[in-house]
Image (cartoon, rainbow, N blue to C red; front, side, top):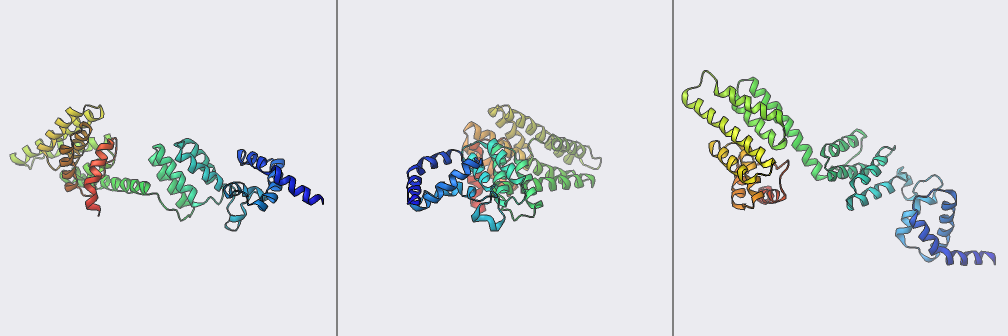
Length: 317
């Protein structure tokens, strides 16, 4: 019987053809598709390995639709989503972004593709692109689950923009102290914002020159302005890797104005970079006392992040 000979031949050459199919999983040439379809007929008799079957299942449909997801309107693109996930796991974030961008560019892209793309952008260091990816998913009316780190980042950005507006409003109302408080909080989320630093400097100058202040109040504002100048110096030294000098400048700033949240932040970061855990812990504890919802954003060391999170954890619980 010729059919028995055909089945026998299929079983004999099946493993070799499967190896070929595994090496070329998305080869859509007619001869490749036909070969896979023939071999699958024989492979079903010996229960071919399920990972290989899943990898090539979409080839069994003439229109390229995975039979298992056809009812949901999914195309062959989920395989690109899997490819992107593998690339992320291997640290190839550029490749992951390329694969996943092709997925979300197609009609009917699943929410999982946007979520994975957001993670790829985040891991590559582009937080803004990660946030925009979630916006794209929302615009596509998808029920997208926002990755935790992206959600935290979006919350910080929203809070920062709110603090910037609040600081500007307070400044216009002639309340420099409130303006400085709002803008200092904003700097915790945007540590490299030159505009915010200039606004705070102007607010200190305006406050120290108000004609209605008595001598004591004027001296206090001048002291706070000097604290800000020392903090700015300490922040610059920290960025240059001069951690010991940064600790001295930030400690002097915090001594002049204990309410200056940024002084506590960068004092803690500089001390952690030097390995001075005691000073770092005290500074971070004061920071959390002044601003319980503070978050370390910017060029901070892993040691500083670890100490800060250890202090913040009991409050979260």
